[in-house]
Length: 470
Image 1 (cartoon, rainbow, N blue to C red):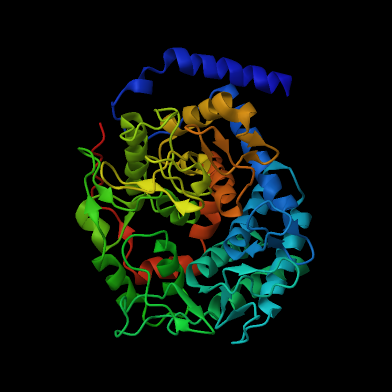
Image 2 (cartoon, rainbow, N blue to C red):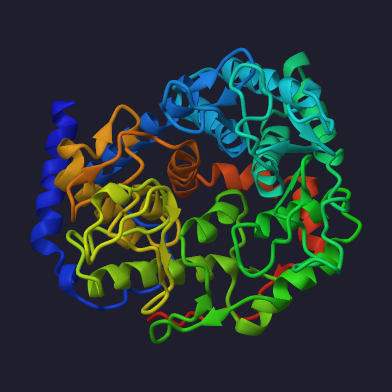
């Protein structure tokens, strides 16, 4: 540990002395070759990844494979966090932290639970029509907080399930059952039932949610959200209306150019640009919309990342700490209204973000390390020094702990979260592994469900990729 801290100290000094970009508005060049990590960078990232892995291993119920939404004693399970845990356990295998048998057994336990849990209209069921409630009890698996049956969180759960179906490919009793259960879970989801009728506000799109007490809400997945993955997954399974729903989705995209040469699909919080590409390697693949724009979704996410980096440098609201080595707005915890003043308003959990000047949604000076870490595959040249700098500046003040970075912090009021959130831990470990080895991409992209979905939605190789950042 002393040697690790020495490496980080040397690395931070070199960044502090040599990083002239810190107060610069220069746009970094598009990275077309792998980023070469120094020894100290690799040591830091390895430690961060292992600590983050421990969240998914220790904040789990080994009796059913459920994962806590957050690291508190009474936290319910987040089904999205379970979807992130399934590949995270495989990362643990590949990195040598746990055995393949241990990961496979816990994966099987988890899939058995979901496949055998109650699917009905009962208020305390675990799910209905193949979908699952957003939050469920860690022990019983029953619906928690009267929450919604969530289409997007079910999609993230199934993202991990589809990974498991490919990763556990060995011919033995445990892994054979994993694959069988994965297919059963995937193909029993009724996406057509979850599509809103034309009489609804977002008719023709997949609904956000359903509750047994009220039925479907008015809102559906339109615009550009993290739910790109949902449509690809659904198109690859039993969704008869996939093509029509996807055209509805594309028709509501919002493309803007917040800074010169940084035009991209707008979604303010960085998680919307990260989560689909955490599972899917969409480099050099385009759909009907992106083919016209001449870039792929990977490049789109890179631009969204750089926009946030530039926004922090510009720091239009004058928040303490914002600069080229401290940035990142996404959905995360926050300090809350108790810190409000006459001129400053602070939020609790919120989808913070920015798509450029005038498009800063809920920016209250709160930074989430997962926002930068989850973009490491898109822009490692600005992400790696940022993570190390945040660790050195704020780690001992409360930003760093047993599971790596806590969820969020606000330097303006010297506030540090005490919790870790499963859905924010996931992008850290999984994107780091994609950066290292492409592990998650490799197995999800070879899945026949995903390949069928991409084909149905007319994804194809880009003809001429326009690299504008020079």
